[in-house]
Image (cartoon, rainbow, N blue to C red; front, side, top):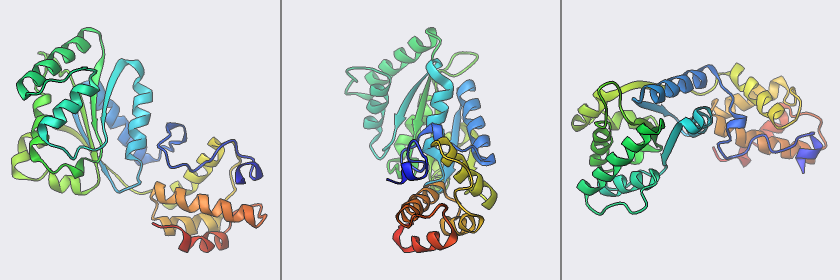
Length: 266
């Protein structure tokens, strides 16, 4: 449909967190640098941001940068009990038959972590949507996992990601020991107007098109409507391209953006 019309190889504003389309705003670049440092030093890092700001996409970009030097364990839905959490970690570490008891599970995990160390591989535990954790014991298990260490460094890096309310959750008195172990923190902010302009051009060009497809007044309207949140920008831009295609328009202007205003659920 609109891809051929606008000279695109693929959809520029897809919903999946594809690192090829990762636009590194100043905030995203800083966040990614901090995550890389946390992995290198095998520390605990906390990354927060509003829905759709690009946290998950950053974790995919981090995986690409680290390559085979790391073994990533991704937990997308941490709303579970402590024992189930440990079993999920064990599965992620390729333990085929996780034990049924906590003590046995921890022994299995300990053995695998030392195996990774001897192989020169850094295990990285990524916990996404951590604000959904409803069992505070899970946070304590996360802390205890970082007890696995040698004299000079830890055996495991942990990245905790979630929406802004995660910071409030971590203020719970019982989580003070975990808070003290968080070495790096960063909060992703929405894109500025200038960054929104750069973001749209970047993704259009990454999809094979040319910059300038959105007029200046369209860029202003998209930024105001989206609040600078990448996922919202994607939804608005996709609908605007469809309307422009249907109208045989060469460019997307503010009138087209305003036309899709009520069609996009933000």
